[in-house]
Structure formats: structure tokens, C-alpha cells
Image (cartoon, rainbow, N blue to C red; front, top):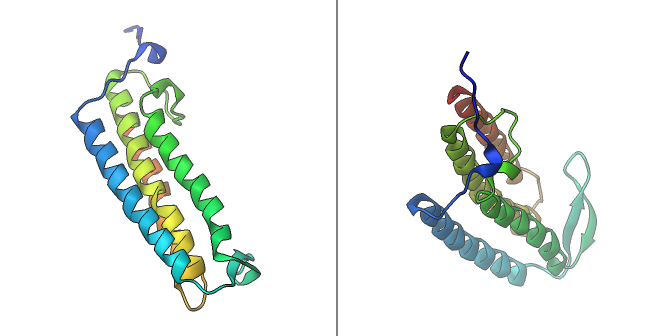
Length: 161
């Protein structure tokens, strides 16, 4: 039986072309998303729904600017996904990583997840401010996409053993 001496904590990640492309795309996406968020907040009425019950009906109302805090938190999560790609031993995968190909796939998966997660704040603002009758519908496809990304990346990483 072949013994695997692979140590994930010893893996060093350096900037390469793929990383640069992801980071530029992320920055452009962030500028567009936040530009739209700010525009939608300025276009919103003085009172907007800020919380929804389990059936999707608004049950709390407030100022449009109160939506900025959850958007900042979601954006910080997306930024953390992009940053954690440089520390692969911190990436939490349901598959044990035993080779460098799996590390590369986990890093790519984390970057794709960061770019997708950046769409959630825009969907939340659109859900609360951009629609005549608020509904969780804009957020659901993005959450579905995030779940699909986790499933696909887990399968690919597992096959790369």
C-alpha cells in the first residue's frame, strides 16, 4: 500500500493568472453590485420591509438604509472566501484533501463561491426594495447555486484522489 505523506498545512499558495482573473472579476462584480445597491437605496421609499416571516410576508418595516448592514456582512463573507483561498488548510471541505490537485480544486471552488456569494446582497436589496410586493424569490436561486457549487466541487475533489 502506498503511503501518502501529503501535508496540507505545508502547501503555499502564490498569486497566479487564475487568482488574478478571479480577483479582478470579484472587484468588478463588487463595484457593480454595490453601485446597484446604493442606487436602489436612494430610489426606495422612506419605509420598506426589513424582515420577513416564514411564509415570505413582511413583518417588520424600517428605513432603506438599515439594509446596508446585512449587505456589508454578506460582502465581508464573500471577501473572506476570496482571502481564504490563500490558506487552503483553512478551507473546510467534507472530503479529506490528500494531493495537490485536490488543493487546486478546493481553491478554485472557494473563489467561485466568493463570487457567487457576492450576489446575495444584491438579491436581498432587490427583494426588499426593488419589487412592488416583496418575496424571497430573488435569493433562492443564488442559494441553490451555492448549494450546487458545494455538491459539484465535493464530487470533483473526491474524484481527484
